[in-house]
Every structure is written in C-alpha cells, then in structure tokens.
Length: 368
Image 1: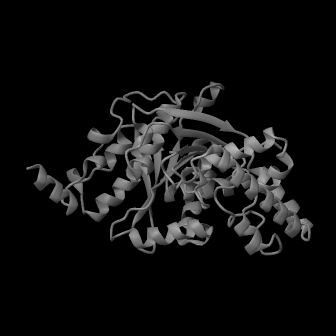
Image 2: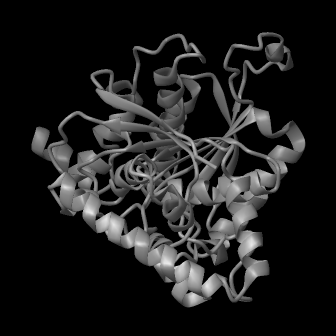
Image 3: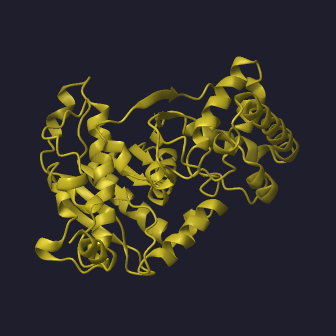
C-alpha cells in the first residue's frame, strides 16, 4: 500500500507528507508569542511554505478538501488576502497574508514585538514542468544580478508598495525562501532606501559569489582568500571610482541608507547557495579587528563584477538595484548548527520551524 501511495504522490494525485501541515507543520505552536524569535520564525517560514503548497495545489489540481495550502496560514490565524501570479507561466510565486487578530492598539506596549498586519511571502524554485522554466530563468538572473528587471520582481515590488501605502511599513513583513528570499531581499533594500524599512525573514538567500565557506575547510586559508579579495576590490574601487567622484558619493550614501535595516538571515553551513553569508560577515569583523577597517569599508560595498562591468561611472545605479544581493551592511543571522543529512535538507524551508533546531545567533551591524 505504501508503494502505491508513493506512486500517487509522484503522479500528483495526492499531496506529499511535506505539504501536509498536520504531518510536517509546527502543530505544537498552538499559541504564538510574538516576542519569541522561534515563534516569529516559524510563522514566517510556514507562510512561505503556504506559497509553495498553493502552487503545488494549482499544479496538481487539488481543490476543495484535497487542497493543502490553507492549513499553513489558518493555523496561525491568517487569511489569504492576495495571490501573486507570474505573468509568464501563470504560476503562483507569492501571496499576501493578513493577520485576523491584528489591532492598531499594539503600539501601547513599547517593548513588545507587534504581530504584522500583512506578511508578503515568496516561494523558491519548484522543479516541476509547470514552473521550472520561469524559476530557473530567475535563478540565473540572481547570479547575474539582474533580478530587478524581471516581470515577477516588478510585480512583487508594486504589491509591497501598495501594502505599505495602505498600512504603513511597521505593519508589513517580508518573507521568502531561496529565490523567494532573493526577491524579498532586493525588495527590502529598495524599500529601505525609500525610507520604509520592513521586517524581513530571509531563508537560505542565494549569495551570488563563490561559496568559499563551503569549498575551503581551513579557517586560515579562508581568511587569506578573503583578505586578498578585499585588497583587490578596494584597489579597483579606488582606481575606478576616483575618476567618478560624484557617483562614488551617491553609492556610499545609498549603501549607508541600508545600515539601519537589519533583516533576519537564516543560513545553513552545509548549503552552498547561502553559506557564504557566514564568511562575508565574519570576514568583515576580522578585518576591523586586525586594523584593516578602512580597506574593508570600501571592499564590503563593492563586488568585482559590478566594478568591472559598471565601472563605477554613469552606468552604475544610484539605488543599486543591480548590485549583488549579498552586499548588506547589517543582518541578524541565524545559523543552523544541526547536521544536515543532504543538500535537500540543508537548503529546505522545513528546518526553520523544526522544534529540535539548534542555532547560533549573531547580530552584525555595519561599523561606520
């Protein structure tokens, strides 16, 4: 009987266990304490899973009692306010969720974390024939730092801006996993630079550079490679941007505008897609410790690719929407220190609400 069930899952006739909330969701969280970071993380990651399941429901034509997505938001007292559709393939790539118990009186408790009124969540890549072509094309855009030009992102930022205009930035959260984390991260940067920083939960966000953290085992060698990289970047930046002083000032202001925004980053050391964030922030601290802060201040806000292609001149964008996603001044990073059996688990969304989760928590704030 079990083999028959597995065949039916493969053929799309029934949901997999990972899509069924009562089997795979954090059903122990019957009451949410918004001051508890694990609770907030669980809600945000489950709403991202809800978007994955919405799209799988659509692909497999699961309607009525066969649909699984609604359980992922109803359990936490959210409603589905809007479904975000990709124009190119009709797939569901995101959703706007509204918290049913939201009250504008929350601000009378200044030291309490308030729940969101809206959570705008974005899924990652689904490797099924209905969605993989568009998703993989967008994955490539992440690598090439051109996600901002995609119709999916343009639509996403419009939806976010509309929500913020209606309810204010303090009542809106962003959440995303993998490709969806890239969408949320880029949107978060743009909104912050416009004066509207949003609470953001970014699960396994892609780092568009070589994953030294995963490839190199020796800490000494890692530091050596990154130190050399910082020297090269700082040297090229000073040479290129010295000829374009006005653009340099604009870019520096643009980077510093982000410093007060502290998104929540969730990374797994065994996941090559996001693990380099660990080294990126750790290296920056190390550079300040050894007295090379001046070099790192320049290096951390530049990438060699953008320096060589944009040249720091007229083609570089003052709002930096085409800069590499990973150029971040500040972040509150959660590192999953539990052993992951394979890449699928290391990169998966389910790890972030696992009650057996073991994590390391580090706050990184940019040193002016």
